[in-house]
Image (cartoon, rainbow, N blue to C red; front, side):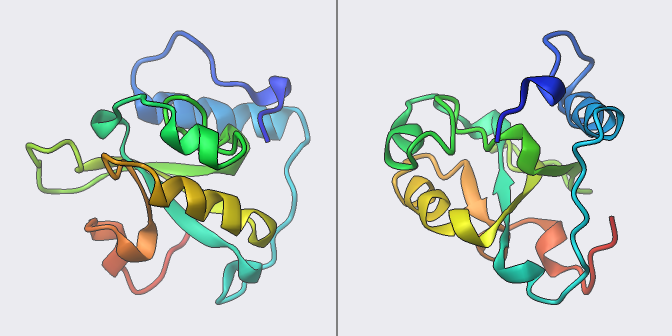
Length: 139
């Protein structure tokens, strides 16, 4: 899930820029897949990654069979968008990446989340972020 065609660029003006560029590359390379809108995300789940809380310890990478990398980042082909909450938090959890984890990969992602000591990766349903409480998500 880390296609070279849409690999994030090294030079950018911030995390939101990185995520937008991955989306643009995905469109340009025609690797987009249609996902029907469904209440259960076709059995998949939404994941939150807090890059400013990352210890880069590799624990999630080792237990998730490489789903997460050494920096605990989910594969860029799962990236949906980057968010900033309206209230700044001193713990770095006011900015985060939203990623979609397909049903077939839930188990390995869950293992990575469980063994991530700094909790920089969490299921959206468990994360204390403004996005979790929205009634609907429109992307």
